[in-house]
Length: 49
Image (cartoon, rainbow, N blue to C red; front, side, top):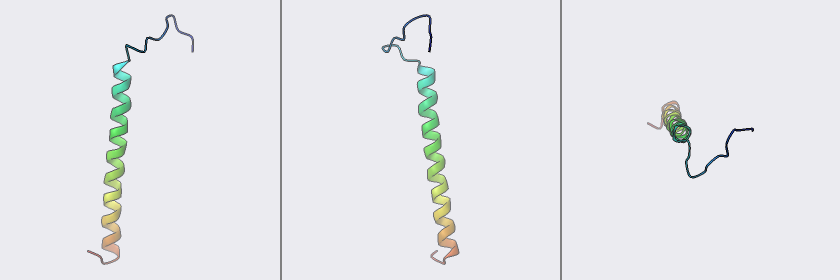
């Protein structure tokens, strides 16, 4: 990628960092919620609850 100035690693782009971590946390939360729902449905269908 061509840029007008060199990237300075001591000055991270905090907006992009926040978006990346926020997205990761959101996806993990959705994964855990879906897993919990799936386990509850499995137990209900198999008479384990």
